[in-house]
Image 1: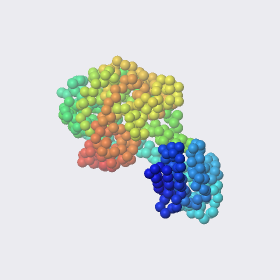
Image 2 (image 1 turned 180 degrees about the vertical axis):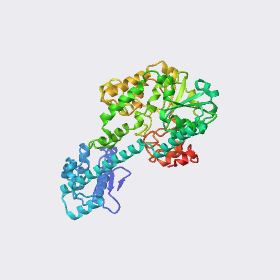
Image 3 (image 1 turned 120 degrees about the horizontal axis):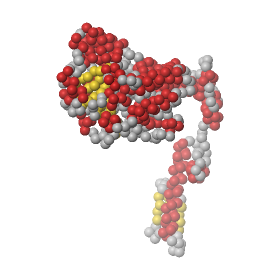
Image 4 (image 1 turned 30 degrees about the vertical axis):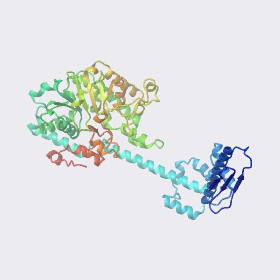
Length: 533
């Protein structure tokens, strides 16, 4: 399209394009008309003409042009100008049919429902169905596939629950072998630590770590990774707390596998004076919790029989049945001030972590009067692990929770925590913990489902000092898409979740960070056929 203006501005000619005859010719006879206004008008008209031409061409490309140029323009611009959407090309009957509810009972015993997309397409092509029949068939097939997918997901969660809750025979073998060694070998019954090192157990110039575990292999990885990466291992004191049945195997292992110059103490709970005096609130709460949980939950079979709940909800309920949530090893951390009355500061470690750096800088962190140094878990994009707030753990539909806490407040992680025991002793944190555990039991476990973190979030509320995420990377037991590079560069990695690195369901590429601290040539490891997954 061309626009030609004479030098005197008295003739303006518009040519639609090359090879076309003169389309518009305007002769300006009188100078009374503003040449400038006429010029602007023709510019606008030229632009409009080109716009109409393009729309017409697009209509011709799209298909048969059944409207005039102006008509097509109105058709295209009308709904947009008036704020209306163009009419759908999908028959309304399809929408109506797909929106109709379809009960699962209606699909039982049906053999005429296509099982694959290929079957569906073949049936549609050969059957000559109308739009409604097409929608009915599509709805039935999709509903059937959704139900099968749901059941497969639930079965996966059930199998993982069983695998993570049971004790692998290799670990059971290791405990039995070490218990036998403790009986028959004097070297496996050494006092830990030796008499000359006992004063270090209450010396606050050392770096004190606490590990509570009834898993010998897991405890050995935590201890080995801690000592190997510590720049001054001679200043490390690791207090290992275990139960009565695991005490002898644990003592035998660390007697025969010295981590000198680090100092290792192995004690069972019944060896602590505080534990043997009177009632221990956490044990009473655990007994009550176990009774209520067994009556309220109805076991795994009752949970998976629910046909209305989503698979992730069922997975959470199955996880609540995990034995670790009723383990004293999981609850005992709330009594650290009583268990270690002479210590000012400790770092508590879970038995499913691996230390990958020197942890001595944790003692240089200024806690500002706070009790618990922890990593926040609401600062990441990972919805399953690092986007957790209080509403992720507590039931805010319960009035007791909703009136006391903010659902959008950030949660924090157990697993690698700095505890200022001096500051802790000035608070009533332990009493608050037991109070809320008791309230949860009285309300049939309706305040929260999973063990120690929810009451911990409540008890330490206002007493948490946030530390850098480098010190504690979570989620290696939840999902295999965790970046190995990111995990390798973290100070401490935590295999929280079902896929523990010592289980067959572990994620192979992530468990490498754990197995590197296991000596597979050790005679006890080899005899129990413990191998890297």
